[in-house]
Length: 97
Image (cartoon, rainbow, N blue to C red; front, side):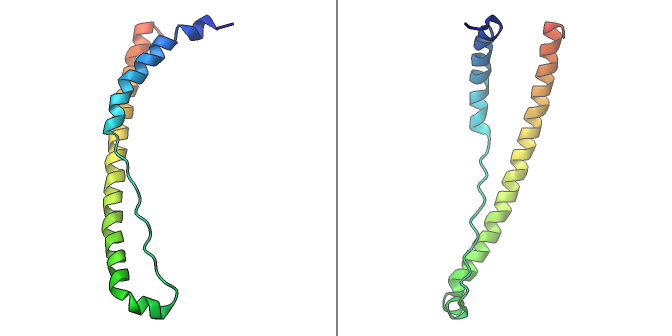
């Protein structure tokens, strides 16, 4: 037997999902770079020093980009949470809670 209170919420849930889906496109995905490999064998480290140095320099640049991405996503999510909080306040006013 279905709960009538839950059944009436289905259209509302569908509307919320449709409203939120386009926003998901704007959410940034921040991917952490992989740590550079450092061989434990000192001879291998010397033999591949230029490649390893480049890997470390690339990592440093990539981790800085990753930190910027995280900061941008944090700011976006914070703004979204503020807007949703305001929307919820308006909703509560509408329903008289």
